[in-house]
Amino acid sequence: MTATATSPVALTTQGAASGAAWRRRVVRSIIKSLIAVVGVTAMVVIVWEFAKWASNTDDELMPHIWTVAASFGAINSQGTPEWVYLLDNAAVTLRNSLFGFAIGTALGLYTGIVIARNKIIGAGLLPLTVLAQTVPIVAIAPALVLWLGTGLLAKVLIAAYLTFFPVTVATAKGIGSVAADQHDLMRICASSSWQLLVKLQLPASLPLIFVGLETAAGLSVIGAIVGELPFGSSSGLGVVILTSWQFYTIQAEPLYDAAFASCLLGAALVFGVRAIRALVPAAKSDTEGST
Picture 1 (cartoon, rainbow, N blue to C red):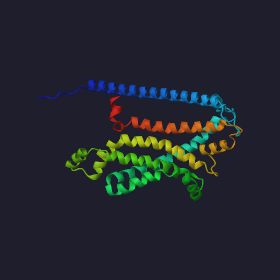
Picture 2 (tube, helix red, strand yellow; picture 1 turned 90 degrees about the horizontal axis):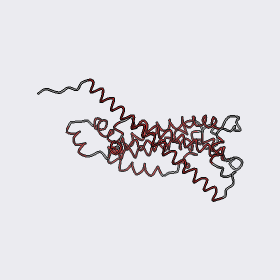
Picture 3 (cartoon, rainbow, N blue to C red; picture 1 turned 30 degrees about the vertical axis):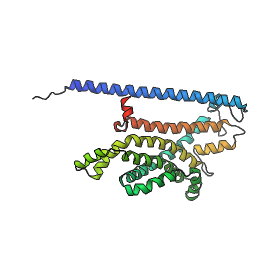
Picture 4 (cartoon, rainbow, N blue to C red; picture 1 turned 120 degrees about the vertical axis):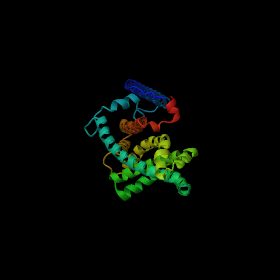
């Protein structure tokens, strides 16, 4: 019996076809996302303008959407265009968010693995983790700022606090959902505990872990902004929001500009996680692979 070898030309053709199919999927995904963003934006504009018309709210309290959009190019009290001012502060918030996201993710992955692989510890630790998530962050942030000051550490810890919980729960649930027969097969092959984790449990739980990471990415921005809100912080979108709120009755547009910038920053981090997920084949769920 002779083995049939695949020619280099056939392998090249298959690779090119696979690459073209992947590029088409990426383009379709981007187009769908853009259509969804445009559609949701249009709905927000319609609802906003309808609410303004129905409630007969003054422009000073509820400006038109186009007035808010135009204010991005206006010169603010600092003597710079509003969009430049927001971009500078968004960069500070992004730094705080990324540090907190990284720390919270690392701790969440470790805690989720411990919970999933040790039933006794998991039975006591998982409920406490879920309960701790219900504590309002605004109740914790002032205490952290008083203890640690208004520097980088307090903001990063608050962002890490919000990041930690979704990653922990997603990791624990993902590892816990691995089928028992797969565990049995690995044990038959005399796999060590470390090999079981690295070769089976983590790869199989990646779809759920990335769902937790997407949630955590948005929450890390919220945590960083909350950490910037207490008086004493000098930069960041939280400072911009607090300052704009104080002058809301005089000029409302800057507050909405800051809120919009915060939404864009959170969306950028979430889509960044999705982009990484698209590059990891094991992170795709069965439904994604069939579409």
